[in-house]
Image (cartoon, rainbow, N blue to C red; front, side):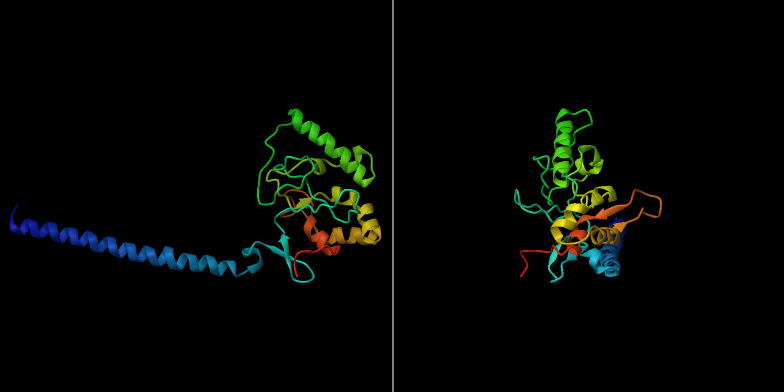
Length: 214
């Protein structure tokens, strides 16, 4: 290979290295600086949503997220002042609230004997808790959502719990219904899904905040 050919090869190699370095620098600025900065700026439009849609009680304590279902429990035999959420598919106990850190469904089909027995047991327990016949218990009360962390229940399930909530919270049924109505969301875009009640928001409105926050 002649000296001229060798020089041409070296020159071509240096051009390729220069082009690669320029592309590397440009992409670093775009993807490492501009894009993250743009995403951060967009997240500041609604800081609450960016931080996990946190909900606070009257003292300012973070008690949960409007996107994650929580189902407070009481000791056996104690008055139950809480609006209850759907069951969790990740729980071993059919009536357990499950672990909010674990998103999972039961993966059991409609013909599964365990699922059917769980549904029957849940229907009986909920009917006894609310003082209604088992036939009055709506479907979402005895079934978990796909994620197991649904923060909402149907208006029918919420209204089923009104008499107990009024009695244990020292309110009238009309007051409890007004609280539920104020935390009921309509269909998305006016036609998608169904009306839904945010359980945690209702419990906060009933005055049940964090007991651990000081």
